[in-house]
Length: 438
Image 1 (cartoon, rainbow, N blue to C red):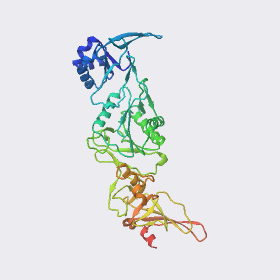
Image 2: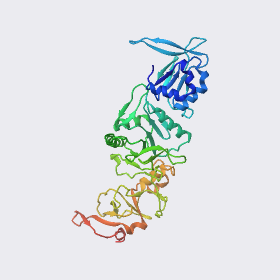
Image 3: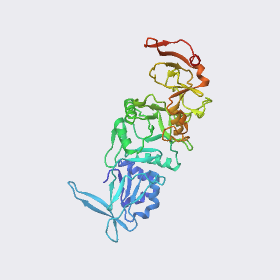
Image 4: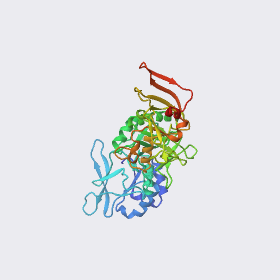
């Protein structure tokens, strides 16, 4: 008997009209969720009933074709075993087992078994199912449900979100659960799972959406939190998961992506970002909309910057203080319609001043994040430089529109004194507009 395969004898063929009875029989034998093989000659005559069983039980069913019978061969070994072989009645040669699958299953979904010389053998390799823009990893027990989700997404032509890789994986035990067709599967840590993801996909986009349900047990939640941080670091990507206690569901028809988040009450939840510590200063390119979807982080505003689209990514982000400082060099930071700033303090040069600036109400614009978000929303191609139609802003980090310069408060100024020593002046008040005109 093959693990994961429930076998019906010729005498059980009468049960094919009653999928509930077959389910009960599988449960009684501890094989609920397995695939089914009908050990009956000319099994194809039961094709209509078998199709109903495959759809009702969400499993694959194997049967002999017309003109074939089931023979039994003793397979030699330390412990001899008997194997059921599909045999052509006329020639006596082995023939293929027919496969009947749930009707909505995606054509490229792998099978757990393959027919080899009239015998069924377990497939080899990693258990995974393609998703729009990514991949789902499954274990034997989760495979039917994962395959059904992939089929549902394929059937409704779920959109692929640019600049976002979508992964699905089980995490109930606090680590990443993967399966292989010919073994019991494994629990991977974040670094190991990152290696598997990188090997399984040609491209891993800058942001990774992870379709999971948080574990129910507290120790597993603590473990998963640590492994998600390791995953983000090992991939050097921002990894998005539901807030703790939440879970991912298939997004409704016409949603902007494949999955949405629900909280523990079944209401729309929020996505949480695990950032790689190698790029922790980068602005988040995605956010959560009111329906729990992960969408590009664009905010429409009348900023008045020539050449910049209306939808921009503001800075600082929501998880940073609204008055997080930025820096600029004078002279040299003035532009047409805005002032150029950076989130890190530049080196002080002779003949220039470095200013620390704070602006309340998040009025600064994150240029790289705005460009990436427009690429992620499919609104603009990235181009070879990464900026495409935003080429005028290439090399800029942050910018403050001219209309907001009077709101910017200068809190520190660095300069070289006459003796050649760098000086630091701390200011209680004074706006950037004052410094630009002085």
